[in-house]
Image 1 (cartoon, rainbow, N blue to C red):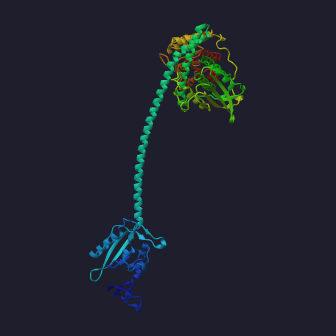
Image 2 (cartoon, one colour):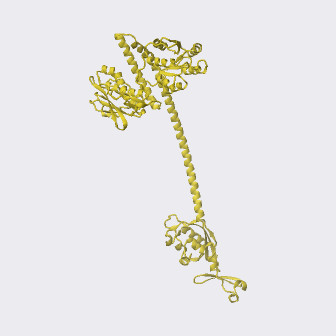
Image 3 (cartoon, helix red, strand yellow):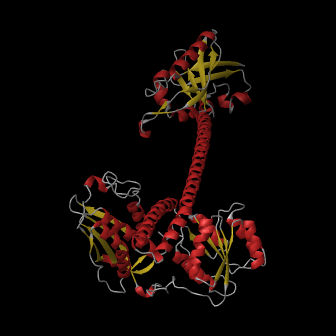
Amino acid sequence: MVCTVRRSRRWYYLQVSGLPESVGSTDAHTAGPAIDFRALFESAPGLYLVLDPRLQIVAASDAYLRATMTAREQILGRDIFEVFPDNPDDPAATGVTNLRASLQRVLQGRKSDTMAVQKYDVELPAAAGGGFEERYWSPCNTAVLGPDGHVAYIIHQVEDVTAYVQLQQQDTQAQHQTAELRRRTEQMQAEILRRSQELHETNQALRQANEAKNEFLSRVSHELRTPLNAILGFSELLTLSELEGDQRDWAAMILKAGRHLLALLNDVLDIARIESGNLAVSVEPIPLGALIADVLDLVRPLAATAGVQLTPAPQLPDDLCVAADRQRLRQVLINLLSNAIKYNHPTGTASVIVEHRPNGWLRVRVIDTGRGIAPQYLSKLFTPFERLDAAQAGFEGTGLGLALSRHLMASMGGTLDVSSLPGNGSTFWLDLPAADPATSSHTTAEDADLLALRSYPSPKLVLYVEDMVENVRLVEQILTHRPSVTLIPAMLAGVALELAREHHPDLVLLDLHLPDMPGDQLLTLLRAEAGTCNLPVVVLSADATQHHIDQLHAAGVAAYLTKPITVRDLLHALDQLLDQHSDGQPTDQARNQITNQDKP
């Protein structure tokens, strides 16, 4: 058998001779002819290209044509690099260079050359939009030697590995993205941890600062209220006595100065409560005319001393009400009218005007004819502790009144603002919603004269737990208005507990700062024993912090009176509690009425 490769104008033939007739031909008429392997080669499933030594294409499989989107008649007889150039849009393309080097190695070495995977983009036909499509190939170039031993042809076999390479690239990219994501996640976690730690430390510092502030305010409140209790209590008793002339005036001056100091202290505590969100207000319908008249009467002595004329209270219908907290609104009006007098001229005037506003609101104007306020100061007027030029002008105060008043108005759902011009006086106004008087629980009936001598139906025994002698003497003097009450003092909590067990008093007055144990601990011991668990307890304390007041109410105290106490407050509490049933426990309404925790 002899095999000879022959070439026609277009095709290559493999002529096989010497085969048996049954193999080499299909019938007797075709015995020994050359067999055309063209169809066999072109239909092969692999991607094959046959090149001559000049690197011109002489044959291509159908699979190769499909993979490269070319036609046989367009590529046969052409240089392979003319048909398949590099992608001009890819400056890093090396397909032509690498393939040319491999083919040269085959021609020179006359042996096969397997190449690494190559990026070799193919040109798209015009029908497909032109341009180049990214492709990756795994080539193998095989030498076919002629009779002379030289390379007659090169079989260029490739495998399209584009999908595999792209999948690898995607996997690598995904790994890089995952690694980057993991790095960023770790970085974010570290940052979150760092910020969380900073936030924790900041919050801890804020809590410590807030606790220190509360402790400071509580201590300052206690240290100032304790001496004020005796100062105000005894001066109030003196003004109620039969003093005459200068002595009566001196007692009134002491009482006035002490109340001014107490008002300043309360302003500081109210600002602290507002900042901590612990200021409680009770909004209800308040008859506006009666409240304004009451405030005008209160500041009238101040106006007389300053030579400022107060205009009469506006004549308002009895049923004209605003929705507000009575005590807080009274506090705001007192502050505004006090300023209208303080910053006025002698012979000046101060007045109050009420106007109806749209949407059912009422406006109260406090107008003065004083020195006025410069425009550059208006924006700072409601800033805490900002006194502007008041200190240089010789006016006393802390700079808290207006800041506190605006906060109080906001807490009641109202507003407070000002208009002023230097030399033309000032107008402060507050806006509040009108209220239906039918829902008001307030009564204008005056309480009975608390200072009149009054005896209860039966003798009463009151245990007073207090370590300061002056406070005990003050309460003793106040109780002279209730001759049927006997006071038993105890300066130590342990002694008080024994006295309570022995005498079963009708009421206990309890100070919280005692030498041997805290007053709230004594309260717990009283509540734990069957013989003393129902004793009504009234706390008389210089601790005016809201959270402590709430704790004592929750523990079951009947009332909480903050020092300095007033004669009327204490007598009112005694009358409310000692007139109760045998258990001595007041209702919630009575407890609210006899607790002075928010008094200005």
